[in-house]
Length: 445
Image (cartoon, rainbow, N blue to C red; front, top):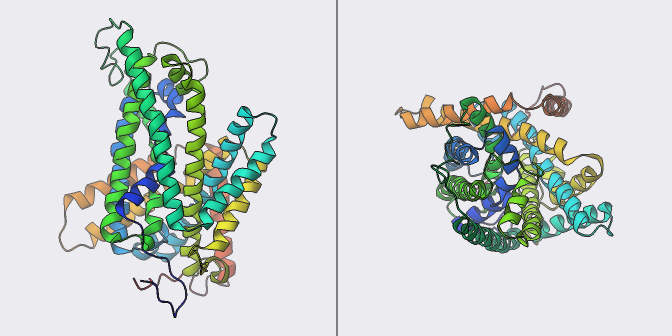
């Protein structure tokens, strides 16, 4: 509860439904559409299977996030969990890598939205759209958490309408065209003529990236009613909702466009699939993907600002700047403005592809840290040893590690440079690590 005589605090106003909406928006209910063509080629047409396997894999990590949020209902998220359970220095490294992850997410959304809007209105230059979207993301986030939640709800409704239209026209197209191939309706799951386990696993490594962003739910722990219950439920349910919805989307797409037929363009494959079912849907879906990235960008900026707030309040970053709240809207105003400025600058100096690759470095490193922290907390140090507390975090850690070492050399090098810069900052801050690097004191609830 807010204390009017003391400094401003984050207000606990979010319910379970708000958390799920936030998670779905950050991940995007149309998440698999952008990578559908790549998944189809890499997995030899078994897109549904890769999405489902990836869902199971991410559920392990989601469980670890939810369990750790029960112990540490803090806005710091992964860096708090790792710092408290493993080592403060490791927590600092994870937090520093997450800063890169969270700040890149709104940046690549600004880039993508600006490029797509420029395609729709070529008379408006790219730089004008970049400024527009960066300012819009920042403005929405500055209005406070309840405003952001209502915007998220509106975006989910809009995307749900388009997805529903896609399912309807897809069903009509499939029912109106003959399909005499044996096992037509099960081929998206398993096609014996093209099945290759290594190829499917390779596709799964990409499909897992569809779910990255669910961890942002834990950064809102201090603004959630009953966080020890709702963070776990929301994190797991968000992965389930996205996984099931994504599976249905790509299943319908594979029935519309069999894997044996090449796509006109792999990167925009899903849009071509939708256009085959109903031509106007080609443009409608393009607008929908634009809206989805707007929602993802605002949600990511919200998570980035609160991550920086958690690190600033714990003295991992200068508290005088990063650990302050705006007394009116109860948002970390300085951090929101900083993330918006970085996103705008990045839109002019970085490509979408490089930004997306670098984003995965920080996300997967944080996932590994949280899984390891959950393993130590709930199994190694627990009086009662439960197999579920052993299997889930270890499985999540192993999968994330395999994906992490599979990143491109450019992303790994850039990530290592970023980590080294963070270590150098820590050395400067503590005068050669002679002082306390970080303070994890938790605020009163």
